[in-house]
Length: 391
Image (cartoon, rainbow, N blue to C red):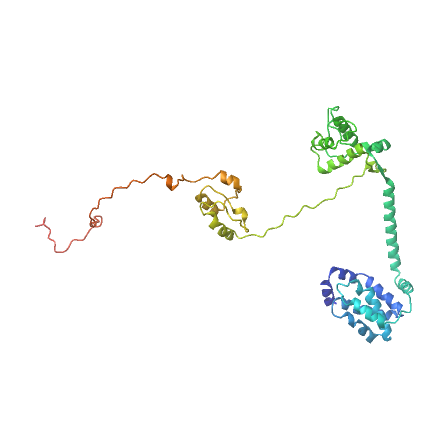
């Protein structure tokens, strides 16, 4: 059993979920009644199914395996195998690739079932009464969900905002933005309701102004609308557009509010992760061309183009290459030609003054090296020297 569970856990999730459900057992039970097998023979049909799923038995060996344990004709065996294959293994053609070929082969050899599917299913329901209870619960849930949808649809009404305000005056008190707004006729900020926003809009640009440019200036540059968030500005745009162009909005007649449709969120494009590049390789490729003096155009580097820099002298260029200074913006060809600078005064050979010959230096004879005496270290006196003072 432990070996089976371990191998089952390695199967794809879709196969694991199917084996854990009741579908396989109920379909096998229906096939059992279609060919008039008793309840004890049900395990003979169901046990090899799990073994085939975990790969310990091949699907083409299923008829021969149940033939050894069932006292039935060969045509009935192929009929049972055909129904089991069609109801269970044919659901997963990507995992049981020979299922279709085996169904065609077994169909030619099979005998027709002695009981219809509906009759066999009634037999299954007699043995498994919980199925009816489960189906009733599912039907009740579906009925309640459909009823809730109908109620919500009955509560919704499509009306332009000016018509909706006349029909449902409470609608004007709905808040559509987060912060309070200021009106010139009021000394203090007021609630950001639909009614107050329309009052500010008509007071600022007038009534029935269909110019989209002026409307856009109000939505993005107005005193109250300039600091709105994107979501609040979208709501205000819907209200003003409905007010100007008589576009219907969805009104909840029960809550007396406008139902705003949430905009779809678009995922920002992910920045591709670039593989790390060895800095030593980049410097090695950059060194020969960057430290060469007098070169006006540099070839493009494919490894790290951001390391290419332009400096005023060779010393700066070599120092930046060694210390890995921050990146500097490359100059364009035009600016490169206009801002050519030299680190030292440059003159052409024709511009240099003629050189005056220098007088030859006198040729003195070479002097012999003089030996140096170190008087700091005392020297021992030889033994045969006579002390004159004593004499």
